[in-house]
Image 1 (cartoon, protein in one colour):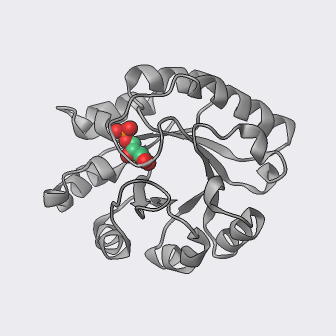
Image 2 (tube, protein in one colour):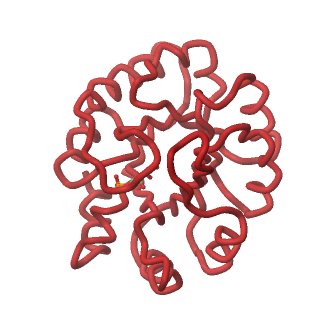
Length: 214
Ligand SMILES: O=C(CO)[C@@H](O)[C@H](O)COP(=O)(O)O
């Protein structure tokens, strides 16, 4: 299992401390949530903060854009040195074009689905994707309750990926902890994003290890 701690739940007053903790940990990617106050009802951080994080991070960056018109920022995300660029299905009118732009910049192309968006929406594009991220909470905030239907949705996505001969990885984001993480792993998840569960833990590195071994 790959584990991508969500930096949204870090201590922003002491960000370097938390990034160093993640550098020392066995986590795989750093998950960076960009929110614009339009696509989601919250504003998080943008490129100046991500550049500062990138300077200290010794793990690949997994950038999740919860913004309208994400295609305007492909080059900026590439210049950060990101490994993964995740855009929302719901934010892209010309999704196929955006996915090609991301891949042409040498990044993994990820498409994210909101909880109410069915996996069937990805039927045509799935062979082109490197990754699909399912939101298991409504995007915009850390620390929300896991939406139960996400486990079955993960299973259905896995079936579609196999049926369409896609190599897409399955990433799940929202409300991931020991218990939900286990069920998601059994359903076919490849990558778990986790915010509050990791950063509020007494021993964040041990919780990362727990999720990694699911
Ligand atoms: O993208 C988001 C929220 O919009 C997530 O990445 C959350 O930041 C995950 O946090 P937890 O639900 O694990 O606390």
